[in-house]
Amino acid sequence: MSLLSFKISSPKIVHETIDGEVVIINLESGFYYSIQNVGTIIWEKAIAGFTVAEILKYLNTNFEASSKDIEIGVYKFLEHLQSEAIVISTETQSGMTNQIAHSTPTHKLAFELPTLQKYTDMESLLLLDPVHEVDETGWPSQPSDQNSNQVSDSV
Image 1 (tube, rainbow, N blue to C red):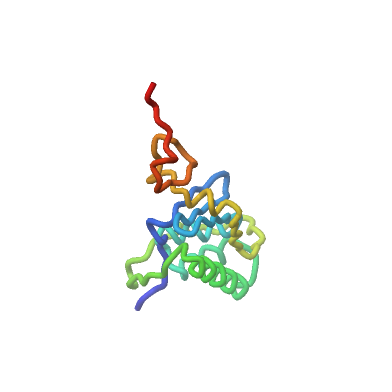
Image 2: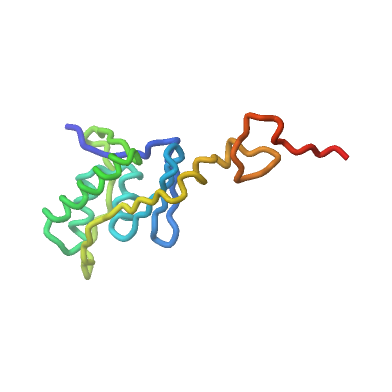
């Protein structure tokens, strides 16, 4: 039996979690994204290789909501991540899944629908590619094909 899981669309996607917020940058499109709250938990488990079934089990154990509402929220969120080409789906064979520590929480948290916030306002700046296209002029600077725009350092 196959189980659905996800992995990051590398190398075009980079991400970092800062104070509970996941910041994701698509290096090909220049778009960046933000995930918070329940979305952060889903993201962390998904990129760690947990199956959707394992994520749903974890959320149902730790959050107050109907299992149907949690399932709908998780699938919509993961579909949104796929539609933005942030993650791609993979299949894991049964028996090769991760173990989630199961303890009964003393107080379940309120479940909020996970959301992916998309930002396009820095597209031009992010597409300048500071890692691969930096020259002596520094970053940010648009690469030029004309030598006449270069400044000479001769005295």
